[in-house]
Image (tube, rainbow, N blue to C red; front, side, top):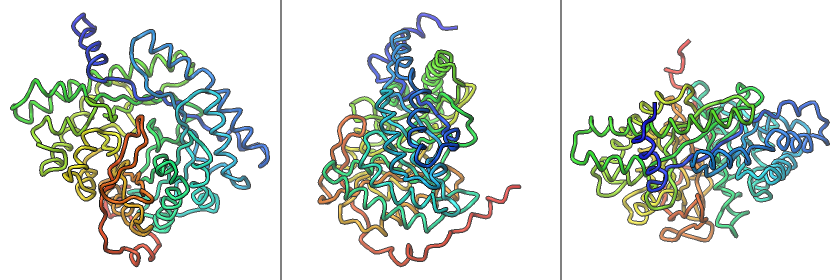
Length: 449
């Protein structure tokens, strides 16, 4: 039962500590569109999205008003588009998705995606090669490609291709500081119920539709830890667990209410701590509250491991269905503490790679020099995929080649995407390594049957 103290505490979290619901995401299957002719498929996709999502934004706004809970984004994720385009121009489907997203008023639509962790089919490769054009011709479409898994290994042909695609996307959107790359993520062990962009897609095991909610609240956790300064880490972990429970409980409430009002199944609550560039809403500041002078210094990985684990343990007790990525995100451009640490040189690409071993996703919203070779981009993806494959966890790369810029410059997007200091990469070549292609075999511990 909620008491007055709980209500007042929640109000303070919302008004002073940046607590919000980061997204209500409608996961939507487009498989019913497959019986359309190739010429009619984009129209069928548009019609289905508009019909199923017509009330999503209105319901989200009503819940905000009724409960006083900020809901930052309303989003849609759809079936991986590569499954739909046997004889269809994939860009035509992307344009239809974008038109539908604008028609229903959502912030983003994800699912311009391909799952190629073992091999690429013809439709997969056509979609992947079309990604730069699709993302530059649309405003709200987000794209993802899964290039590896613990069960399958790493598809190095796909990794090689993604280095080229990211480079092309950066060049084609250079007048927007490479914005297309901010809407593209490369996964290992991608999950089917992720409500967060740019990696959201509606998996084929998810049914016709589902309501997935992503919570936030780094500022709430950072504020809570002020009460346990100087205490042992056992106490720190317990405080994070209690706070994560409260945050996730709010997400459960919103998810259930949205599900009821939209008459659609409740999917999951993703209890990830998702930062923003706003002061007081930073995962980096949580780590610094634990005693680090600056995020990125020695001890950062240990602090992040504690945070991620405690968030999961506290949140999983608060919702009947926890899923998605669930933990702590470390997107450099979207976290004011990470931005400051990168500017100071304390947070490097190598340190971020180590941190991804224990966080929810991976190398996220990281700007690199504009002359970074495509094989270097592929090698960065391969390293991150290897961490995911061997550790049986989701990892990802959302990397931003800053065309015409170098270390010390910045990419500026504004809003939730923030701004990214350009970080150095190693100058030694990985071209011969990437040119090998083929598949890195799955680790021995993948054989669990």
